[in-house]
Image 1 (cartoon, rainbow, N blue to C red):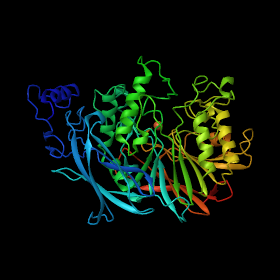
Image 2: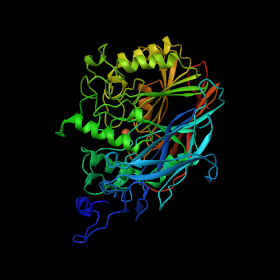
Image 3: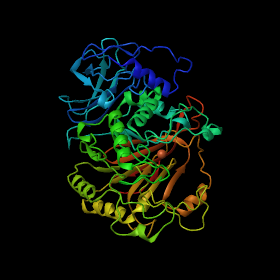
Image 4: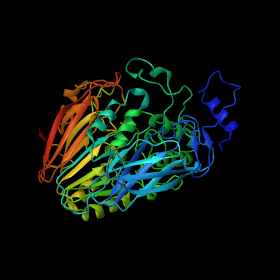
Length: 529
Ligand SMILES: [Fe+2]
């Protein structure tokens, strides 16, 4: 049974029940205890999700939270049981797997079920149930057997979803696509506090609760995920297909590197903060127990084999990277030191082994940050005369980038595709095989996805866009709208559509394709389609 006194204290702290001081609040759980939990309010308020597929199954996730913005989700400290079902049909008539799972307070009453025993390469449907409520029904898809013939994959890459910057219309449009999967490149939450200054212009969309400060403690991070996950459009996207989840900086702290936080103004020890951030990330993502953090460490790089079509390596560019060589745009000589890395030596070796054993036509580096060199001198707010490289991206470790290109050469990766985000713009790059010549023969392409919401309403034509492309002739497309990148992968072609909405300050904006590219297998260049 939840402790009513504790629940009341939490509500007071969060100012969620102004004017109710003195009332004794009933806990959200009427009768707790395994198998008997009953709820006053809908316990699946944070939705459901699935991800990390294998040929025989995938992870299904939910978190019991009848009071999503209470610190304990309204669950108190007792464990609670839920049942789950996986069916072959969307009406849940032909249930093929089912079971019971226990949600514990130590993991915020989250549930991660690793479903097995399913057939490869097909859709399934799933839901969770308590004695008083059914969750929504989600769709998910198993991987084909490694090396098995596969004619097509359709997926989206997306990320950067700052809550207070606008509505999640882009997630609604992704849900409508019924993709095979979504690669989330990170910035699922933003750790920063509510700022009064942002309540104007493009940034007056929806606000966080007034007392949401900078995330530091586990309770802070949990509440941030809870807030974000109450969004119906985001829930619809998760229910529509499985996710390959990763994290970038804002799941922890802006621009963090390995064991240091960049923003020294927040005087808090970083490792406990990172441990709290990873714990909350794990609790809210549909990932396997092998990804469960151990204190401030988490093993989040992993690879997925899509038959004979693609190897999708989800990388971790945060945890093992070199400390910043200098301030973000300083372009110091130290940044070019040969030992600098974004992946760390162990992950570089893992990538070598993974791509070496790949049976897929396309080798996909699914990662968080801008990979190709990017000169920022003409970007709005920079306006500099000389080369401006951003140290938080791969330009902060060009030697590490060259080693990744060497891995692609060494493993005979024929068709490398780099996925990225972080910049809150849509950019398509060709990546030259010669680091000293941006216009040399391309050996890979990079599809950098724009943000779901971060940055507020953008514009189709980037300010200073012509100058930016002049400084970066390997850029083949640049836009500042919100959206996602849609990928249609076939044995002979990779087709990418830059999808965008004109507004996120008004709900329900339509989505349009702004630009399409094709990469032909065996030729690593971008062709406008
Ligand atoms: Fe971001």
